[in-house]
Length: 233
Image (cartoon, rainbow, N blue to C red; front, top):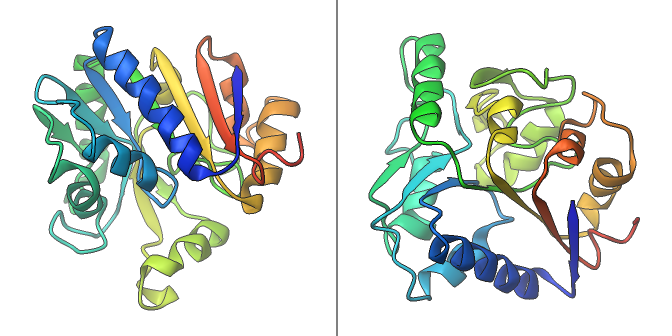
């Protein structure tokens, strides 16, 4: 695990962009993408660059259960607004949160990942150490699955909704096993609120209570931290 410490999220996002550009130039064609506030500056860097993803595939980590593709709070809308509208991919995959049969949708998504092995996976990290929507105590052996979101995750995501009651309580998420199968992983973390989770991920034991701790066992992980997020290391 390579740790890169930077002053702030702006410097960190520039470094992350350089790593993605290098991977693309070296033949990476399948990129695992994340949503939330953490990758926003990175996506801005990508949109302002000359990089062209029309030869590449994107596969997103997750989607809220119950939100349609066109919902303004869906992760599809998020990706379109912050990346795809400027930098479209040859094909982009995001779980269908409105699927009638969620188990079948999870199986379908596993097929997408199997057919398109991820070259580089972008991750954020939750305040409780989750990656994707893989909450504490999630089995490391799971692939795509349906998640009951914890109260801490719901509260963290409440800022994107008008009120807490509007925040979905379930999500469909790429599993930890799927994330670990990516050839390279790039995890970003900004702010003091992430410091404890980062400390546990890097210095603590590999335990299901801290899902991100499993990354210690991956052969190629780069972690980019700002000063605040890395303050407990």
